[in-house]
Image 1 (cartoon, chains in turn purple, green):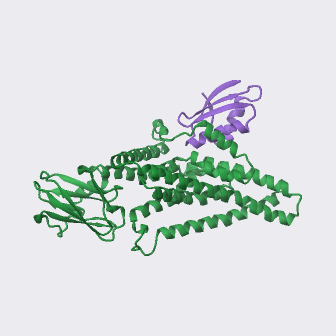
Image 2 (cartoon, helix red, strand yellow):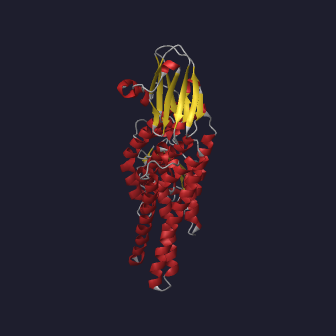
Length: 70
Length: 392
């Protein structure tokens, strides 16, 4: 399992964090996502054999946000 | 296949129109043509609060909460409609069309109904909690609420990262639980989901919740939240059938508008808090002193006899400025005549005086001697109607 932090600069409210956390259900290989509007970031724990950084960034973009590796 | 799903839009329009009609009916009740009707509607202050709450919900509240609440509902609905479709493909096609229509409209109606009930109950609870705040804590609460609202507005304007902390993040276990619930396909799911939205309020809803707390009344808190949530319903209903992406775009587009509204509400609340403190720095007290010609003492006031009359009316206090001789006690006669507004809740912060006046009658208050040039401010308990006693 790999743990990575991404900056999400375009979050506008706490609900955006919840939307991003819903990737836990949508994305295979994700163990846990903790997104924080206060910090404008998400910490994702995932299986690097199933998922990679580009796929995560693309999935976040699909939710309407920009993920930048911290 | 797409042909089968298309008709599901129709009930959305129908029910949206239904909700809009209910919303208009509520607005008409709130704006009775006979403004002299003697009931709670005569309280112009409370009614204007309800109207503001309703239109805040209608214009901005719904949009600002769409990102998650609308998305959750949409995902729940999508699953339900899909399931309905699969279950009914074996049946007669004509019957199927009608059945899908009914089933797709029902979950939204249930969700909104449940949300309305939940937020009304929450409003009652907040108002009830507020009623336990005695005068001084209520003043402090109003100031805190005002600061919270202004902070939230500055957050929306993205003024500084520090203001992001004015937004309350719901605990992870709650958001996760709500998300899991949204996956259900039974009728109870949207009902339950609607109720759960009280745990994920958006910034505007939080501001409205703070206002409900500030009313200090169970009924008023409930009515305020009911009006606000009812106002959000049409937008929610429409967006439930649109993509979540559109919701997010709309939210970003309207964010500044929402911020302006919350900023105004925040300043109004802060101003009420300042009035309740008897501060000369409140907007009314400042402007009254800037434009003294508007606040001349009423000639009815007979200060020579050591008595002065203050007419307490539904629209405020008349005259707003009382001029009395310094250095002697005098009696303030508070005269009400079918007064039902919050002006009845009379407060003189500097003297720590508070009294709920009868709707019709006279109440005498002895004002102790004050130095020449000093001013004592009076206000209603909500900090909306104000006035001053100037000692000369």
